[in-house]
Length: 289
DNA sequence: CGTCTTTGACCAGCGC
DNA sequence: GCGCTGGTCAAAGACG
Image (cartoon, rainbow, N blue to C red; front, side, top):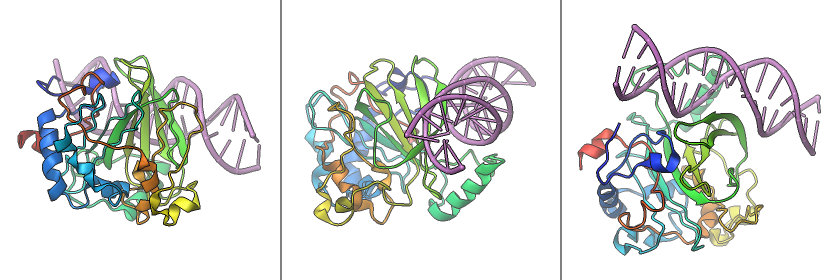
């Protein structure tokens, strides 16, 4: 259970082991720096904001002294992208990481799989241990300082479960995108070490534009029109629709990332800030140093 | 009446 | 093999 040494323990952040795989910080950054080249479009593509701030991937070099550390993980050599996102608010911190358990080599068949999945889930969910373990969609998570658990991100979610998690006094909520044929899911929980931090983990890719995304944002607007979901007065409520990645209109969410994003050095205060979500890191990556 | 939340139960994966 | 834990289902209730 303990793989660490310089490895961030998400348990300390989440109070559970959902992010069962930890990630050597060094590795993360190695990847981050090099990933800029290797990963085509990187995770920003997933987010649909690749055209926003190219310097985004400079985080590996910036070594921002900020107290907030964002990390991007790309566990899956192929299609797992993570992204970082950080509100400009000094007090707020948003740490994100992406990962994937989609260890499968197959591409994510968004349409087919999703439809199938939906039909399956109707009755017998039986994920069927077809070949390997259960396949998961690429996931990535981020921490956001907020008083509200469920942060608006432009999509409609339906809560389908809530569970108490080990080592945490806060329950974890499970949401699913209400849009038909879109099986994006997300988990929301609070860091038990810092109740003010909300940890949101997205899984899957939206196959549709944000249902409540203002047209202005959808159109061009150069994505400069952030979609405000500041329904909550908290300055820490991030408004983002990270799951738009993969979608053709990915850029529609660009505005959501208008916030200052920055990748910072993991070495610094990441740990203090409860680290990031090293959610599911393929073992091979760990091996690869 | 339709949609969403709540909540207990079930199932699968994983560690011991 | 067993127990723990995470993830999901689905019925019931709440709400607009």
